[in-house]
Image (tube, rainbow, N blue to C red; front, side):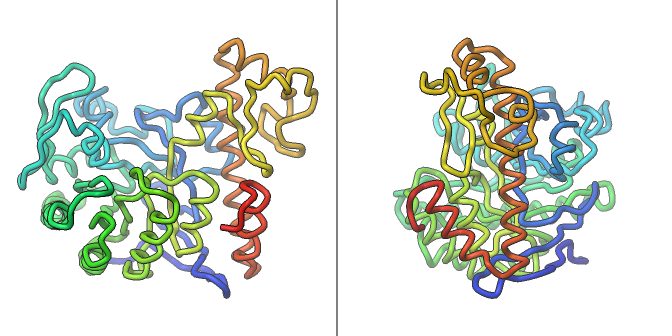
Length: 376
């Protein structure tokens, strides 16, 4: 299999790197943050606006799209790109995390996962093969294998059993992709698991790195562990994931976690955080989160961020944004969403510039000090 990743530049003082991921709907420059569009839309913002910002890839979710609108609808449109009017790349999660979060509504066996829909209670079965087939119908540019995600605090035996199933499902996913042949255009990524046990993490990372995947995701993080456990587990796991392929950490979107990922040579990351907090009136600035609901902002006639070119900062005051959020006006959440995604895109551009100039470590330290008032 030909590689899909080209490394362009590596920071001299860290493992941070610049690269390009070559995908069916165009190249993606890395490091790259991917906005989350779970149901085929990034909430509160036009796809054209996301494209105009510069984003080259967004995320959608197999589990949710399978339930609504369903594979028959997606197939009739020729896939999610046509259905949603997005001509960039799409990464689809396998639904493994959603099944993990529905612990009371699912049962995991060697063959696959039986679960109840959170919408109507109907029963469904996800097998590794079926998840690959669904993502073929979606037209995913990056498709994720079905895996078993586990919470922190479980015993080693339970974590080992989950990793064994994840490995078996990874092998079956590859077989199904190969069976589909050229009709499967996406790039299938494996997912490292192993909970927070170093021996299982190492085994999982090494095993998946050797398998016939063009990219590797590090899963099982940001599932309730504290910051130090996240950092230690990420650093340890990344040591054993091949650097020849693009590396992706799932569910990471706060500025500090993005910096930790980049520092460890991670290329891709995604999270709903930026859009979720925007709908609740929280927006990013270099000095931390600004909570628009606070009365202190009522008479603030300045922009959220001076010099920001998003619609909110160009056309509206913080005082007006405060008014919209307090009144639960839809426009408030939409403008805040655009600002946060614009901010994160610019943030990643600054990270790339720092890597290019071999000053990523300095940039990370200065940013964390200003945004969080801490060193790391």
